[in-house]
Amino acid sequence: MKNSNHKSRFDPKYTPIPLHEDRERQMTRVILTKSRHWSYEKEYRIFRPETASQNLSYPVELLTGVIFGCMTPGEVRASVKQWVKDGNCRVAFFESRPKAAEFGLDIVRIE
Image 1 (tube, one colour):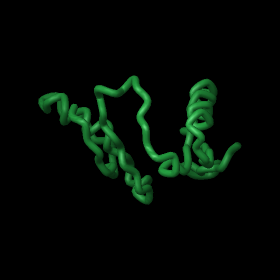
Image 2 (image 1 turned 180 degrees about the vertical axis):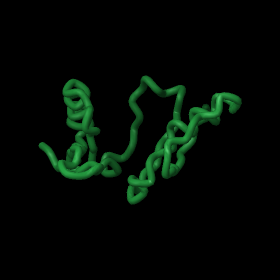
Image 3 (image 1 turned 45 degrees about the vertical axis):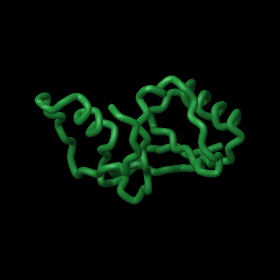
């Protein structure tokens, strides 16, 4: 997969990944496709496969918040918070929580 920056794609349903497609197209679908429920986000995703295990530099003011998924393990949360601290970023942390009376998630600010 080549280096590239892409806006996320939104789909109303799960899209199967056709096995006859080339691997690069399959990976692009997997990495970019999100539920339409998230279409309000102005998210871009960066592909840089050759730097997958390296730290990337960017202006710290570009990172404004981190949202943890409702099933993010504690050790992953701790690692991300440490990376943010080490990078001198000023961000707000949030977590998603299942709604109590309906399908969906609430995004709640955390410390």
